[in-house]
Image 1 (cartoon, rainbow, N blue to C red):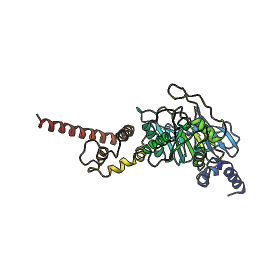
Image 2 (cartoon, rainbow, N blue to C red):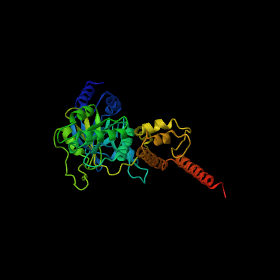
Image 3 (cartoon, rainbow, N blue to C red):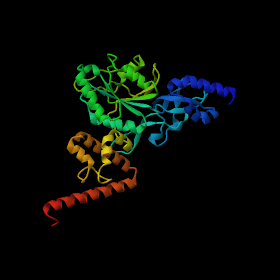
Image 4 (cartoon, rainbow, N blue to C red):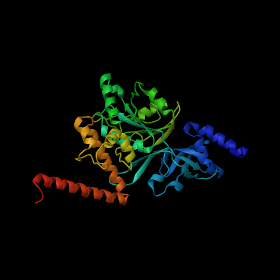
Length: 370
């Protein structure tokens, strides 16, 4: 490596380290560096252009070369990219480095198209407001996507100051822990500073994406972690505890205590997109029970020797958890089937099999076929 190239690489390393740059990223970028391109991380994407933080500071670049027909391959917040060197107008993002992780959701439950929300994320923070009744099924949905992304999920219960009774707060945390096996659950009050030191310590070790509905307190939480009012905050409606979208784009921000935070707009719809692995991790206890079923393809509905139904009868497993599990599996299966002809055929075959079983059961009750 020439002295000029070595100096340039050292400059990039020192300037981009706060944004997550490391030796592995540098090695992956080496072929692009040899071509004279600059490394940078996308901090925001907006209308065909993006803001990229580079060793020379923040620059605006055109994304014309990284906008394929596949929506999962468009450049997004969190990507590490190769940008034109100084001199050209406009400057273009030429490509992006292979992603380590990607948070993807379905754009609509009636379509099979996925939407990538953030890339190269280490921690997926699901913000849930304690100002409203807990929706455990929605939390499970967020966590399925988080696990599928490859990031480590964390549930943060915001506005804990609205639950002054410690016993009640402990019960709420326990309810969420039951719905989130293997996931840390942290109660936080940005207003009073409670729990923020623990959260800051968690996110200081990489890139975190902040997810949740409008009114979950994401922007307030982001400001508390940043130590300044960077993100706008709006009042929450008293009638339902919800708020309007304060954040309208996905923004990547370096945290003063280390780590990087990607704030996202409030998500109304959180459709699954090929997330069977994530669903399995959210409902790990059901998957483990299923290993004890008599039949390997047990649907856990009426089959003899079903360990899942036995756990339901004994009270070991709740009806709510099983229904949520079934719902997410069905939804995910529908999404995948739209792009997988073989799976569609298997689903139709299974429907016919279950229909035949149901018919046989009815005939048996009536005393045989008529």
